[in-house]
Image 1 (cartoon, rainbow, N blue to C red):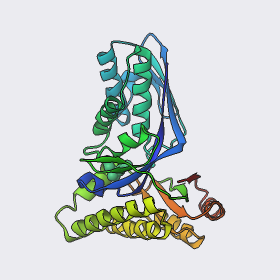
Image 2 (image 1 turned 180 degrees about the vertical axis):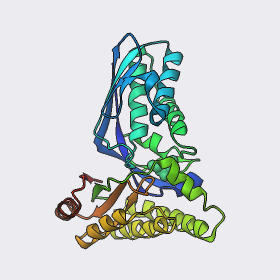
Image 3 (image 1 turned 120 degrees about the horizontal axis):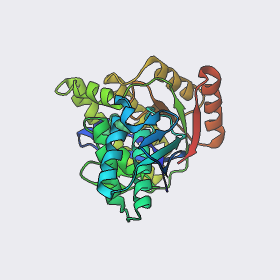
Image 4 (image 1 turned 90 degrees about the vertical axis):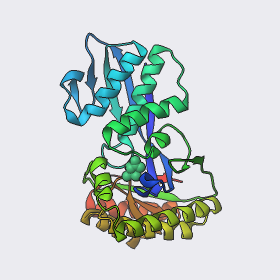
Length: 298
Ligand code: MEV
């Protein structure tokens, strides 16, 4: 039996969303994770990131291992060889951990022939995310299981639709910091002037972005994204490589560019008004940094 899930892109509002502020996230359909369950004598994982018995997987896979054990118990099925395939880069801020969890949960429920509501799937993915990092807002869990954008706060989740017609270039910095560490880095600044100022800016710019998204106002959205990036920078979430990718994207015509996801590495997104500019930005990023890129229409 099989399950799958796509990735996610946080357009704006990462980190502040952990503290109850809003954020906007979009499905990242260029990247998908698939899980196939094959009957086996013992639980094992076959994947690009780990091959072996479930019991032998190291700490890095603890959230997946725990999820599988809990699902096995809850549904009373298995053991399985869990064959995982993914074209979402791991640890890059594109929701790979949530997508892996969602694909596994879907495969289990399909195998057990038990119906799975979106609300229950969200709970399972959020359970796995909680094991992966201390304080997940839930935005990743929600976005990887739905096909549309969200305007999200912890308290309220609204599907977002609008008249925006634009392109995003996504570029992988190839640097990695676990989301847990980036979230802790921000948490360590709580109570400082810098933290409070950054939260206020992020919150306001997300509200502006929601209006801009609905009205199809690209310039205002771009302005809000650039200001959000300045706030994320002030919290120490950028890196020299991300700064360089952002500069290159803007020099080649992007209206805005910022990190997306946990930061301190991971991915950069650049907002472009048309396909021609998006391809120009993509070529410049690939030529100068040999980085993996995707172009997606929003
Ligand atoms: C990670 O994709 C986004 C963060 O805001 C953490 C979270 O919302 O759980 C950094």
